[in-house]
Amino acid sequence: QVRLVESGGGLVQAGGSLRLSCAASGRTFSGHAMAWFRQAPGKEREFVATINSSGGTTYYADSVKGRFTISRDNTKNTVSLQMNRLKFEDTAVYYCAARALVGRSSQSKYDYGYWGQGTQVTVSS
Image (cartoon, rainbow, N blue to C red; front, side, top):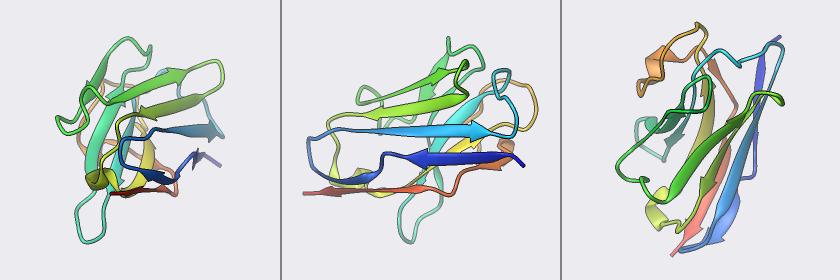
């Protein structure tokens, strides 16, 4: 059974930092693009960041560019999201996702076949 499990969420003051981690089990995703999405109450799930299979190429939403960094460790089957200079508007449930098929990174949630259960990030203003 394939599982993606996020951790590292919590409550932080604006301007602070958090590091989210996602551990995959059940199969290896070393050949697959992975990503982070987020969903705030009453809003659609939106793209945050994606990383290709080797970790050499990353893309970010404009709203987080320069503040967030996505990385992966294929030896551990994990992907992480370092979030710095957090803002109130970053408050959301953050989801880890992996493409089911080998392919390029994507910013579309419809291209990801595996999802974690989400971890809450709350930024107080």
